[in-house]
Amino acid sequence: MNYSRQREVILDTLERNAIHPTAEKLMEVIKEENPDSNIGIATVYRNLRKLADAGIIKRIEGLEDAEHFDHNTHTHYHFICNKCKKVFDIDEDIADGIIEKTTQKTGFAITDYDIVFKGICKNCID
Amino acid sequence: MNYSRQREVILDTLERNAIHPTAEKLMEVIKEENPDSNIGIATVYRNLRKLADAGIIKRIEGLEDAEHFDHNTHTHYHFICNKCKKVFDIDEDIADGIIEKTTQKTGFAITDYDIVFKGICKNCID
DNA sequence: ACTTAAAATGATAATAGGTATCAATTATTT
DNA sequence: AAATAATTGATACCTATTATCATTTTAAGT
Image 1 (cartoon, chains in turn red, yellow, green, orange):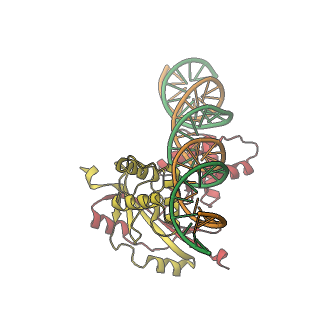
Image 2 (cartoon, rainbow over the protein chains, first blue to last red; image 1 turned 90 degrees about the horizontal axis):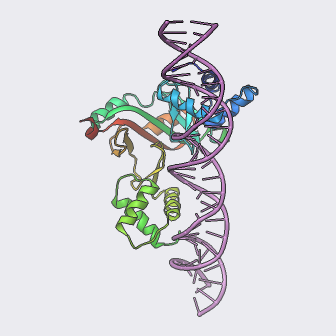
Image 3 (spheres, each protein chain N blue to C red; image 1 turned 60 degrees about the vertical axis):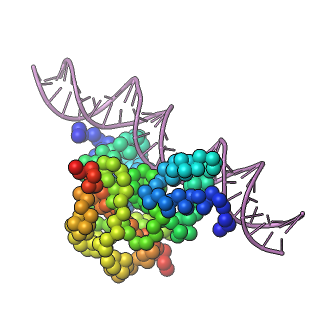
């Protein structure tokens, strides 16, 4: 993968904004932070895909209509609030050994898995 | 919800074809099985949404590009083969008490959750 | 530095999944 | 049977994402 200024901005912005943004949302933030730098939306989509395929960032599927992206590639889970639609990290040990257990029981060669919780977040309950 | 012949066909076809189809795929099957019956694609989308919202069937998100639907609403998980793209049920007890555990640790009001595994299925390994 | 080949970009057309609209039809209630 | 509400089919529309392509930038070799 060759260097590109745009890719650096995209990755850096994703890392500094841990909000699990969609491509469109990330584009918005990039524009705000770099009003002069003229990065096209196709470049954002392209690079997010490339970075995710390379395992440098993670694609989060199963949330609303669009794909979201996460700079954190360590094992963790997500919760999306049905009301405010915000995505929260769940960094707790709630599914210990689930890959091994499932591999053993099913015989599938599991390479990846995701857990998505839905409900109402603390802020929206009150 | 009023009765409709179309909805009955849609639900019945979904139940008899436990292949976790997308709306388009289900439409295909319906057309094959009922060449005369002229059900529009909008009706399929509309009814799958309505049935899922009513809890009669379940929407599976996080699989490829499109939403898939499952007539089985009991707690179970899914595995999608990255090669053949088939969706398999995982009906094993691999995440016991995960809602309680996560609710307790996070304080979110969790109403639902999904686990999606990815990898290569037995058929595609050989 | 200069040249060349490969990779990346920005603009935008194209595609795909899904929803909204609306007049016509079908169910339900009285 | 008449009135009201729900549903349908056709299709226009919207939104997320990818493809295309000419141009620019990067990396490597001389």
